[in-house]
Figure 1 (cartoon, rainbow, N blue to C red):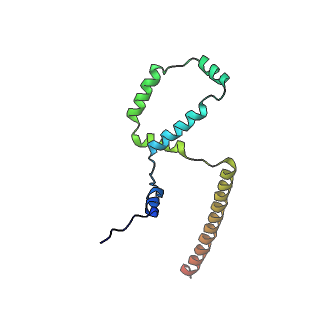
Figure 2: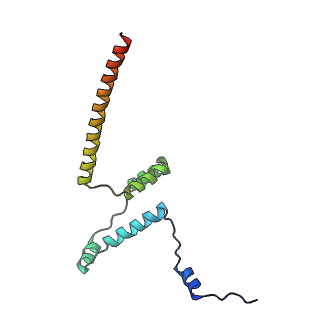
Figure 3: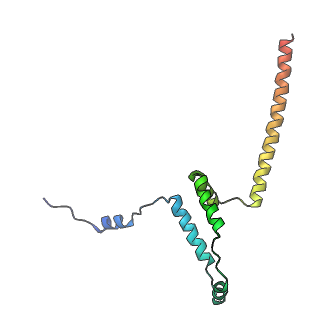
Length: 131
């Protein structure tokens, strides 16, 4: 009995498959922070000099205490919600206006149709009940 030979295509198929890993919230935040750090790095030598001359300020004790109190008082849910809100891509002003206009038009149309339906059914019931 002969064993089947391995072909090159089977090896290639294995090497071509990609494992897709879902990112957790923590990983996304770390990636975003890394991107921000890259953006903030100076691009010219003069920027490096001017940034080195600025004094580094340490957190005041009051800020440290408030931070600790915030960690104790605010549940994890709210902190994670705030972090998630920072990741949201908010619409621009033009799109916001268009969507707001659409909602207002729909609300007016719906309100007017409910008004006429209510008055019409009210008249019908008055005719039927007052006969």
